[in-house]
Image 1: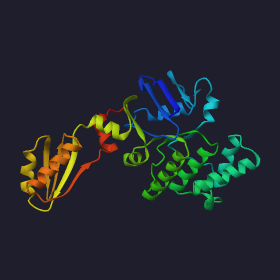
Image 2: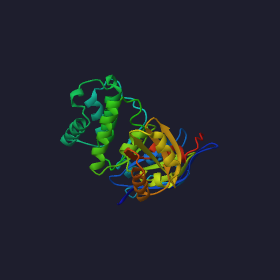
Image 3: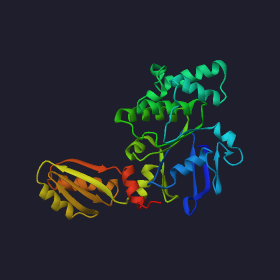
Image 4: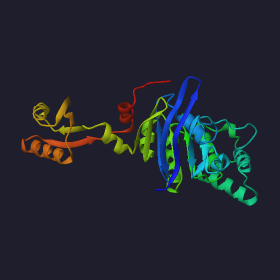
Length: 311
């Protein structure tokens, strides 16, 4: 996987507060990376530096091999930055708003007109073409914000809290747009406090706290590294008390909790060990109807890896 974004030893302070400290990571084309951390972790500062809107105290960022310090103009043509606030200009309808930014990106003539309509169609905005940009709903406003970001066909999208304030349907539709963009080869760096959304969208995550990287990798890799025991659920038709006594005598089983006919416990073994446990339960006469592992999600990872420190 070729490297699209390389953040190298990045540091940025505001007075005595170190917003970002010696941060490094990479991501490739077509990869969707979630940026996760508590308030004040340094996510927005890092994204603003990547977008050439702020200058680091130390380190550098390279987008498609271009430095934000040495060649910021080349970087700007390769990235699309979507800030956490959308403030449309008054007295412009949707297409006029997109036309303004298309001209700012240097698009001209028929190519500009074709691009505006293509991007508007992709984001589902054509039926709102004549509507004032300031009169859109939150969800449609975010679509317009994204459309503006896509006009110059950037390689990397930097999205800061794009789903904030959206209703469930709007979030689902927005997530579908991002998946299409990733499938087309766009790299996407996205921050959000809606962790289940990131968990369903991202290939990998970077967890920050107090400006430093705590952990990075795919959700599955991080889950294996931070949570050695598996959370397992066993459902029986009856005799939950007998099932509880059985589990309490089994090796590698801990923290058994009974909830009616459902028993939850921690299991320190692998898949083969879990299969053997099920075999013993059935051989012992327990009417097991379900045995499943609870997948570790992004919220679990966040709670395991961060301490809740704010700055």
